[in-house]
Image (tube, rainbow, N blue to C red; front, side, top):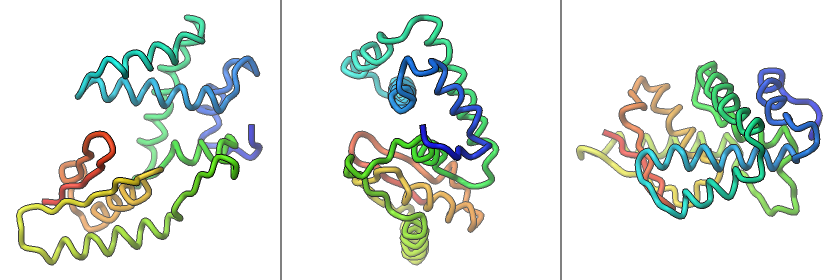
Length: 177
């Protein structure tokens, strides 16, 4: 595990590290994200293949170990609720636990690029007179554009929770009314 964990994430990271070395913390993180992403998706669109992935993911854990995952979810929700702006908390934790490695060929857009792109896009949308506009981000990765766009709407006092929608599968979209 990478040293220097931000103090606000320490409780979440200590929950991730529940096994004291039995499981790699990065694997636990990935499993946590997988099972909760599937759980959220299943509320809206169920697919058997997701269910199979869910059970494949959790089968390596003992029952008492699985009890940690709802605590991780609660802690993550608390972390997001404490943020005044829309923020990639999971991405920051991913980075801080040492999961980003050059060998993984992972490339992340700087936050400033996301902000600039979101500002330019939102300004373009504001000039149009149609009922809604759609923005596509089919290569969203960590979602920096999506998160930045939400913050731009919030900064402009636009109710992003009612104006921001995410689409299905590979296509991520916003609807701005």
